[in-house]
Image 1 (spheres, helix red, strand yellow):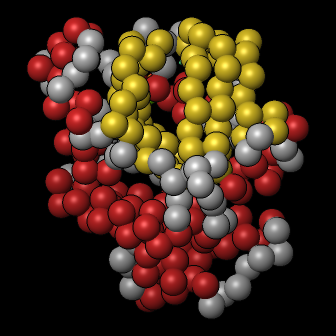
Image 2: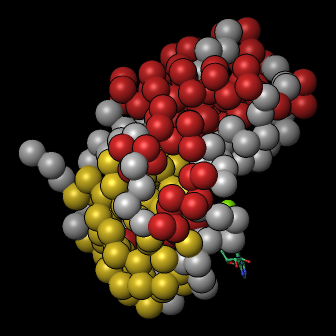
Length: 233
Ligand code: ADP
Ligand code: MG
């Protein structure tokens, strides 16, 4: 049985113009489109980092504004392009969210590091001793520490080199499968969208131009807009 996780009805915010979509539990939705088309704005609406000017967003059948915002952000975790970690250690970062809910079990930490392929010895490492790829993996682990049901990702690999991209993608696929996550991810990398996504949403000027299954929609675009976007990539 499918279950609707998000439903947006006639949503407007900045460039976003009359966005309508539903996302079912377990979908892996890839958002792509030209720079400035509203991808990040759309992503931020899913955990109230931003709110619509018009229209309605429902999360699990209830208006998103009626959910307790701290719990919402626990359940709908966001990983940004540039990881914002606290100074101090890896463990401090991983424990922050769970401690807010009195759910911190130090035993869980090894599993979290394992998800993102970092050794347990990294727990005590100061953040400023990590490489860019390691920071992004700690950032992912910190979001996972909250046991989200939805993972929002805004170009999480765009600052990484090919080797780190491959590692993070492996980590992502493992943990999506192990934790039964719903994923909404912005990427400018269409090969990555095909590797990770089950559904694509192509945005241009704040509007959904095409919404379809991956990888098919990228191999055989229906609209001229997506056709020209894919050939110019
Ligand atoms: P994308 O992620 O697709 O590159 P964004 O969602 O960041 O696009 O931006 C969509 C539009 O909204 C752009 O025209 C951008 O300049 C504008 N915008 C983004 N963030 C803000 C903001 N905080 N205040 C005002 N305008 C913004
Ligand atoms: Mg963006």
